[in-house]
Length: 200
Image (cartoon, rainbow, N blue to C red; front, side, top):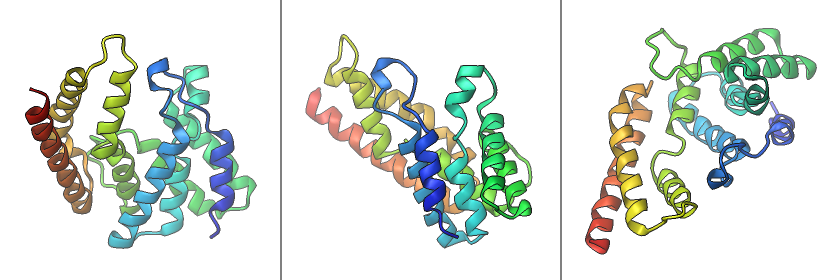
């Protein structure tokens, strides 16, 4: 299946993150493309239906901005938009149902339901985003936008995020994601250690 049309649809419907000014550098399209690339990597190792995985990864957040405006659950709006769009381009109905189901459950990272490999891959790809090097960049950029920005302020934010994320390895649905998560935590540990030596 050619995914370029779906990517273009996502690009057109995605809008800049509507959060505070300090996070305008984050947007749903960039996040979606990172999730998409990780989903392909995980599928290459773990298998599963590539079309289901890619379509769910690309469309998992397609309704987030609309949901904010209408105060509805983002996963429900995204699933609705995804199903309607995929139907309009003639995607097989069985595939559409699978994609919609994945989008609906994707935010529930702590679920203990019996999930398909396709669902696990999309959930892991979404969960891994902004953990690791990208997360460090996010924390530094958020801190830089604050009135009292400093290297130490960024250091404390990175350290707090590290503490918050480390126990969340339990949210990984596959061993491959757990291995990747562990590597990213080690990267952050090393960065914090080096930063402590340089600024204190």
